[in-house]
Image (cartoon, rainbow, N blue to C red):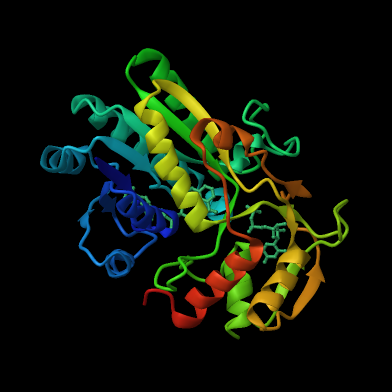
Length: 337
Ligand code: NAD
Ligand code: UDP
């Protein structure tokens, strides 16, 4: 079965390409490399010991998509292609609304032309918004997003729900990722943020490598286990396997289904730092600074629906996440460059 991975050269897409291929699927990667490198694809090929099909194209370019659909005849689409920086989305909202929504609309329109019905979408825990109830359950209210990036995820969910109401054979799976982290155990592929990372795990690995002097822990006065923020860090390979499960699920279900992809375990920032030191032996100097505006005290998933309906659950530990992230960072100090 051929699966078109829009944005498949990126962090989550590349790991998913590997897991799909290992599970017997035939991934077709489409990416414009706006936040990735074709080297990620050659690394996937190295892991798999076989070549992959890929195209450099903008997913908002329907003519380019039509040419790829005509040639490849995909059976399903997984849509990772989008911009993902919260800060940047506040500074450049139009760019974010344009790219993150136009990619979805273009894919859906071309899928209709080619009678492709399965669509897996990269959503986020951010759709639960600032009033998120913990642990988050798929039936909880959504909205109250605190930045344009979050709204693009929620708007995409609404677009896909409406599309599935009107188009009877559409099969949509909305995957709400919690905090993807870590890297493939080979150390060949991983997260390669441009500039100074915003997210915790790549920041920690760059402190460990000496690229950054110390970690700023954003707040130690939250009502949490140790005062620092608590998140549900999910190993990117577990997350990638969630996409394999979602494709299997979509084979037998029309309409829309929503799944949290998280571990169900909250880990605090300071616990993550300690886990990193324990599993790598590398010290992480840190300072406590003010809270980051817009951050919630704790966010973690109830992942039981994914277990029940897709037989998927995360298996890797926070120690695995730290060890694999560090292997990737130390083997590739400049990322894919
Ligand atoms: P990423 O930036 O590494 O991957 C996205 C890929 O899409 C990149 O390779 C980029 O070049 C490509 N892309 C962007 N716009 C494109 C376009 N118009 N045409 C073609 N390619 C385009 O990000 P990621 O971490 O792999 O995230 C994948 C998806 O998951 C994104 O939609 C993101 O919003 C979502 N998500 C990520 C996280 C996270 O923490 N990483 C959490 C929740 C949801
Ligand atoms: N965080 C931190 N220092 C950093 C980056 C993040 O203390 O340099 C904290 C942040 O306040 C939050 C957690 O780490 O409690 C996860 O942040 P991240 O940006 O990785 O994910 P998100 O905020 O999207 O959950």
